[in-house]
Every structure is written in C-alpha cells, then in structure tokens.
Length: 228
Image (cartoon, rainbow, N blue to C red; front, side):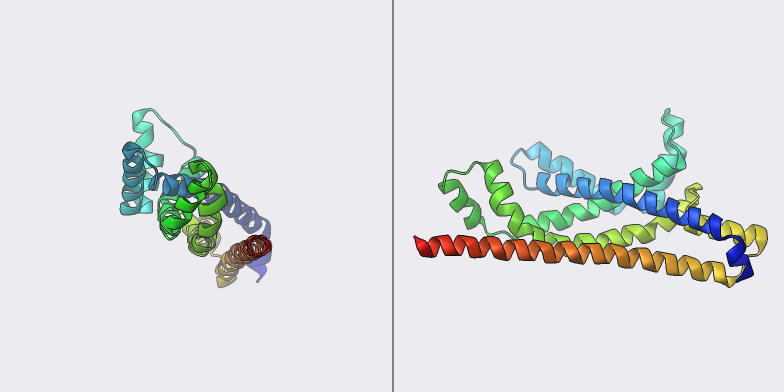
C-alpha cells in the first residue's frame, strides 16, 4: 500500500491518459460506425463497396497489427504519428468497423413498409431516414454499441505496445523499475472496472431515454390517429 500511495499521482495521470484516449477514439469509432453503417444501405454501389471494404479490412486484421502499421510502418511512407494519435486512430478505425455492422443490422431491421409509407406521404428519402428509419433503429443499435465501447475501453491497454503512457504501460513500468506491489495492479483493475461501469451506465441511460421518447412519439401519433 505504501508503494501505491507513493505512485498515486503517476497512476492518476495514467488513468487520465487512458480516459482521454478512450474518449477520443470512442467519438471517432461512433462517427465511423454511423457513416459506414448507413453507407452499407446507400443507393450508389461504390459507396456500399467502400463501406464493405473498410469493414472487412479493419475487422479482419488484428488491432495490434493495425497499431503497428500506424506507428511503425507509416513513418517509412513519410507519415509520422505520435503514440497517442496512432492509438486514437487505430482504436477508432477498428471499433468503428465493428460498430458499422451494428448500425447496418439495426437499419435493416426496420420494415421496408415503413419507408414506403413515409415516401407515400410525401417525405423525401432523407426525411424518411431521420423521422422514420433512424428512430426505430436506435433502440436496436444502442445496446451492441454500448457493449462495443466497453470493449474499446479495455482495448486501450493494447496501446502500451506502441509506448502510449496509459494505465497498463505505466503499471508495467512501475513494476519493472520500482518493483511495485500487487496493490498497483489492484488499482489498475479497479480503475478499468469503474470506467467500464461508467460507460455502461451512460449507455443504459441513453437506451432508456430512446425507449421513452419512442413510446411517447408512438403514443402521440396514436392519439392523433384516434382523433381523426
């Protein structure tokens, strides 16, 4: 416990670094998930193929290999990234490819008749997407995306392999240099657990909010229909 107290500021700084890497990579991953997932159902064939190639490539290659390419191989091609930038980009690209499948499946689960009815009422394809398709797909896509974000958080530990000074890297360095006790690794486990619980709590809150909004919208539309 003495070693844990003596290294508390180092560990807290590493925890903050892990949280920042996760936050930035999660924003990138969610944005790519939405764009690529929607692109898989887009009309232009080349857009569908581009999204398909992206998903197959980054789901089929190990995250470690992707990080090595970004950090060690790109400099040979004239592009140099900092360890943090390579970590954020690698995590974002990898988990964005997985998230795109969740978005695609959720959109495909919306009955085609819903879109046809919306277009029959005079809504454009874009209006039908945002007012009909997306609200029905959100409750389906949010749970797997929330679980995916927890996996992305845990995967930040892999970035230690490209010298990112995150929590796992720092704990290993303390062990190698100072012979830190098991208390340090107990802190690491508890820190990851607490951050994962926070991510799940936010995810579950969004799911409940979407379901409540969906029920209220359905109730409002049903009331209007009954009045007519």
